[in-house]
Amino acid sequence: MSPKEVGIGELLRHLSDLFDRDAERIYASMKLGVDYRARYTPVIRAFGDGPMSIGELQKIVRVTQGAISQTVKLMKEAGLLEAADSTDQRVSRVDLTKLGRSVKATLTAEWEMHIDVINDLEREIDVPLREALAEMISALERKSYFERIEEKTKTEGCGIR
Image (cartoon, rainbow, N blue to C red; front, side):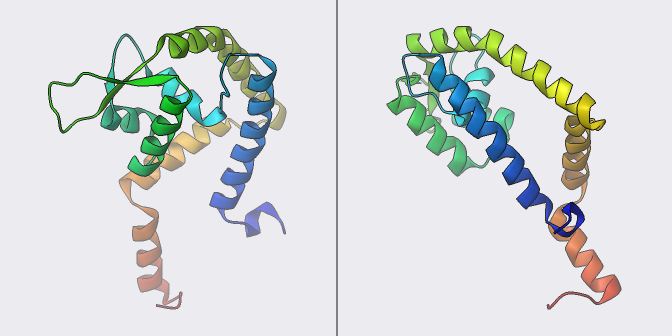
């Protein structure tokens, strides 16, 4: 099957799996004192100077509420995050633990190297992939994929609905 015959979700999942698989091999070789998973990276990178709510993390990391909640739970179990005080009991807040801050400090230089490798990959394929993906996201935020399918169904009479 050619890439033009495959859905973008399939290609993105496969690309993500390729990156995550090798990133986890790299993290495992670093002896961080924790079983560090690639899915923790966007969460741990989101932290600045203090606690964050689950909603704040969700907006920064841009995943579903369920995905961020599951990742936060795993990170708490791994000792990277802990519950933080909140002035509003309806809002769960978390913060990096001492271990979490140490892991973030150690990985910061590593992530810079990863970005360099991604830059090299984009030059190799001669496609600014991150820019293209950001543009696709912006387009879908303006008009959802669902709306676009509905529109095509109405104008072209295609689909099974």
